[in-house]
Image (cartoon, rainbow, N blue to C red; front, side, top):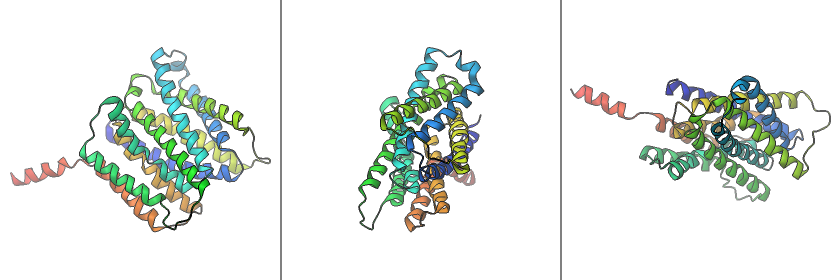
Length: 299
């Protein structure tokens, strides 16, 4: 697969993940606990991945087990923190704070893999962080401790997702993507199961309707199974930093969908979203092409 096709598929992942925040909010508004949401989406993901790749999974090696568990743990805590945090804050905040993982990815790559940061990457990350700051900042001066705690949990989830992307971008290439995907689903299910048992959230609202069923199906089949298999697969053909920059659009799409769901439109959403898009385009565009064209004309 060529890098440009891998990046286009990751863009599709970003759109679907952006919509996922709305379906999580629908479930939260319907009375479904955050831990139950991640447990169900993890369970569906694990079952689907096993059905698709059981021939590879039953023949897994110790290397497959190691990579799968590390990828699974970072992914599980990322989504669990994200869901719990969103239950305390808004869908738009959760979707937009999550894109902070774009900062975590190059940092983890530098710390664990000694990959030097390019100047273009540093500038792009700074612009992206500025965009995120505009999106989530409250200049009205109102203090909401619960919402701030929720934002902090979503931020912690973003850091874990950044670690997951950085790890998959390097070690994920050493094993089959189907095996890794299965472990990501199974670990999310088991981690969430432990949480709901400890927190006493093993319950579903009475009279669960079609909205809950559709939301769970979207999160389990599309947002988890399809998107995370595509993530693991596509990261074999692009860099971790490129993947993270493209997937930051998840926050922009999530914020846009949140408007349709009922969140208020603000100038910060517009300005922050434009900055994020610009930072992604800046990082992905090969500026050397411009210089080559200029040299060709001069000749």
